[in-house]
Length: 91
Image (cartoon, rainbow, N blue to C red):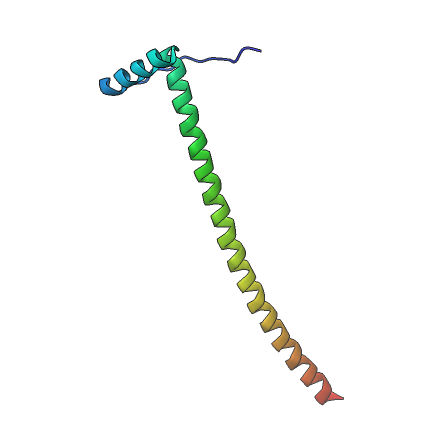
């Protein structure tokens, strides 16, 4: 199945175009292939960075949630102790 293509216009410095032309000559492919490979590599790198940032963010949130849960458990235990003491005094 052929991939769907869409034409875009990109403005690049002449020096970069010259480098792309050199690479396309060496690899014996057209400049569109070079541009597509470069864009795919860049997008892939960005996805990895975003996933790492997302993972780091979830790790930080998990650490916060764990500390908060411990704090709430401690407060609940203290409240339970006070309630038990009040109940035992009333008996």
